[in-house]
Image (cartoon, rainbow, N blue to C red; front, side, top):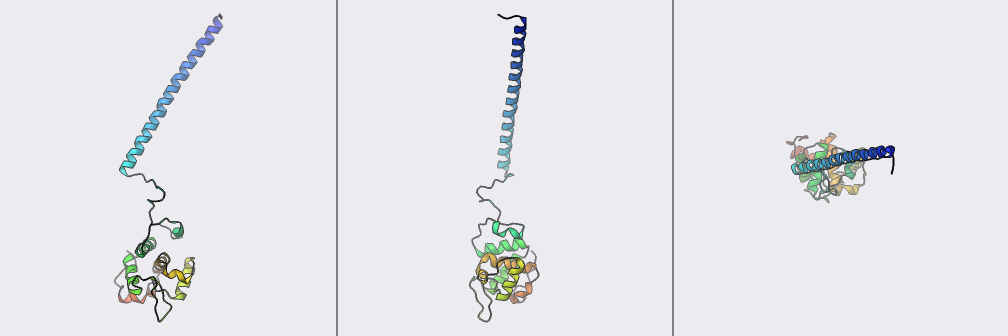
Length: 182
């Protein structure tokens, strides 16, 4: 067969293979250990409720901190009251004050119309006020939006936040005891 040189080469190759095999086993064990660690950690976090996994947007919080993301916020708001509470929360105004104003102004009727003026909708906004405030907000000033709960309550909360509380005469009669901020 071969001489001493060939035997040394074979021994070196065998040693190298054994070393690589040990390294592979060591790395494989570390890899398995890492997988087990992260799996257990994930299970613990999910069990304790410390991890939030949004599933198709179902768990998204309807309350947001920035006014400009209104259109991008996923919501499950189905009643005018939900929209009113959302707007009050976002603008930091008292939802009970808004509730009192809407109750006395329109009785929660989206189509409420004052026969003596152009006041219309939940907040009884007159045409000129609606257009002016919506332009200041950077929103669509279409008058038909006064009956839309989202737009009406966002505009009302914005106006209260900006100091236009005196716009609603009912505030002085029925809602004066409510503070502007919660």
